[in-house]
Length: 220
Image 1 (tube, rainbow, N blue to C red):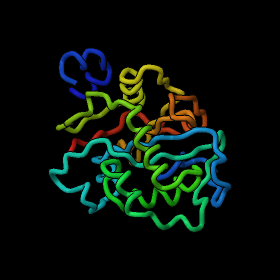
Image 2 (spheres, rainbow, N blue to C red):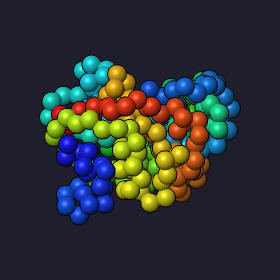
Image 3 (cartoon, rainbow, N blue to C red):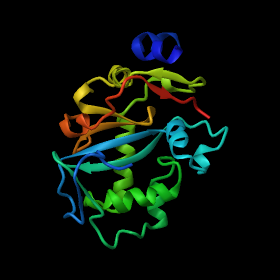
Image 4 (spheres, one colour):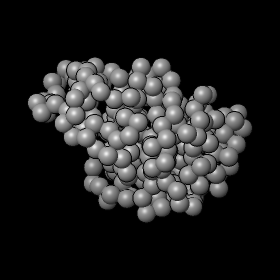
């Protein structure tokens, strides 16, 4: 119940403590590079991903201490999204991976996000990872999620509200919550193409979790 109290009263908490692009959208594989309208920053709740997927990745190890991690930065269109836009985009120079350091749970995810989404931005691998960092630095994670040590149940709208309270200018039509089997998986936040602020995204917002209460697993 501590998390719910924090999410509902995020301002007070600040004083007292603390997949792929829109899954229901149309995917345009091999689309021309650079032809998109905005970005989606996907922040995965690592404990939810691990519980839902049964993954044995290092990020799921007990004691990893991971909460929100970057899933990816996805070029998006008003309807649908491009993917795998460069057939030769498999190779990521080691120097480019250095630009991704600390952004993703591991280098394999960084490479895959470049191949599937980064190739559609028109940027180089290094340019894409710098854009991911810029987007990540634009979004503040609500204090109620930091070092969450107990399993909680909340409404998706409460998670959205917590992010809106922590990020001035973010509205409910600019963010969606993703869940699976009633377990919280990630938030998806829509950003302007120049990465200077948030923007509306009806299709992404409409693809969000519409169930009742969902479980937020504790940090491992």
